[in-house]
Structures are given as structure tokens and as C-alpha cells.
Length: 168
Ligand code: ZN
Image (spheres, rainbow, N blue to C red):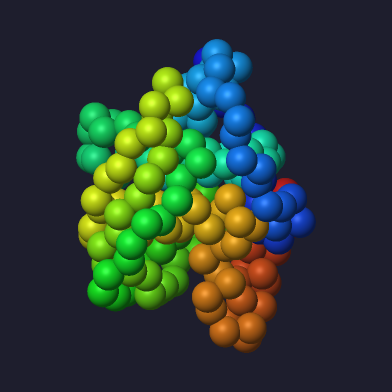
């Protein structure tokens, strides 16, 4: 297993639209293992392939406190959405920035697991937020896109400043 590099906003590679996965094989499973390791190390609760510069439709999620609920979503699709919730979100590709985003409260999702088996899951609360956030990544979308242009500009400036401090 290996830690992968997480690319950060405003890297244009975060805007790529990921391609559908035709075959779930050992190479993909190895990548999934590396993504879990990278996510837990960060630490984070979700990581989309786009964030490690792999432009294929899959993501890993674990919203538990003790790394006990690893979930793999390959070719995820949202079948139904209900309600609304506002949650403060962060992102491993936008480090140190948190902002309120409105998402569906309950969703039903269809995906494939690490063996390529199709499954469906009903999610609400944090898991539902996380799934919607990670699926956005696969479409080249970031949570800061939901902010006003002015706020997004402030996020860019703050990140630039953080990077200058880190480099100094
Ligand atoms: Zn993210």
C-alpha cells in the first residue's frame, strides 16, 4: 500500500470529469486500498479518485469514528433525493477551509462494490453529505463552487497565504 498525493484547489485537474469504470480488477482494488490509506492518514472521511489525479468514477468513504465502516462506491448514481440539510463541509483538496453547503437530506444510491457487485444504499445525515460531496468531485465540482464568487476568491487568497507560510 502507498500514500497518494492529494491535489489541491485551484489545480485544474480537479475539474476533470471522471470516466465510467468498465472492469473492476486487481489494479483498481490496489488503488482503492491506497485511497483508504491516504484518506485515513490525512485524516478525512471521504476521498474521490479525482483528488488523487485518477479520473475514473470511484470513491472511498468512512464516516465512522474508528475506521470501522469503509465503503467503496464504483460508478455511483443517485437514484432519489429527499429533503434538505445544511452541513459545514471541508475537503482534503481545500485544506483548512470550511463552509456551509445545502445538500439533499436523504438519498438512495446505486454503486458497485470492490468486487464489482452492484448494490443500493439509503443514506442520510453525514453519510449522505459525504456521498454527494465525493460524487461532485467525479464531475469536476468542488464544495467551494456553492459559495459566492467573493467568498470563493477569499478561499483562494487564504490558501495562497497558507502555502506561502508553509513554503517560508
Ligand atoms: Zn472533497
